Length: 335
Image (cartoon, rainbow, N blue to C red; front, side, top):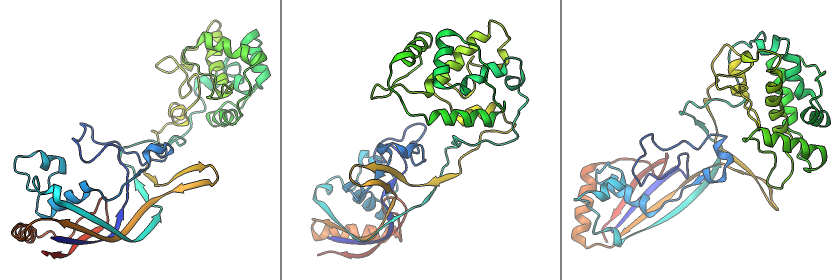
């Protein structure tokens, strides 16, 4: 018995983690199609037609709308004795690479955006200690080491408002790692003694600059507490909003200093970029395939007629092949 299925624009990628062939987690499968998640290679999921795909289609054609694992676990699974004699051929005729805009339903927030008006009059920007506090990020690396090791006074000035602070942090973030030696190593070692969460080195053993500046802000917070009331500068958790010992998150930083909520992400293009040695920058996008799927069942004529009658009675006109796309039975041959 042969069942011929024609299909158009079958999506060959998945935006969720886990598998559709296992029990659904309580909170559902996680969406991994966001720009942030796609930076990880393991979240770009390619999906081809598999034996489970074929079995899911056959169950759908006879009117069984349960998930495949649920059908297989039941006592009256129709294909329990037939699966071993089923094979298939997937024959693609058109393969397209497209950029699709994927709707994000998780309620995720944009890492670099905010809503509402900026509160430039927050005490952390308008207090007597403000220039001494934020002046840390205006220091060059040598001055920063002097501050950490020798507690020099801060005479640098900045325009004290959230956007300027963020821009300066972005400048620091772009500074390349340096060799961990001399005064830089001494200053970094001192920060490591003071802050357990401080992570100064990359995988090559080089000194990261941004964690030094961020942890130096926490050091200055401690030092200024000896002379000023710094309660207004702290978050509810006792830290600096949006800034950790090793970096910063713009959306969390701006959340405190704006009148609106964090900006939700509506969606994003489904695209993953990576650098491949010898090829350069490679883009992975959504794969759409059109073609024909041939399902072969090595059963006797009586069983073939029974299965065909069940398919006719169920009357399934069209269905998805994998995710999205349009598929339909174009022919059923009993011999």
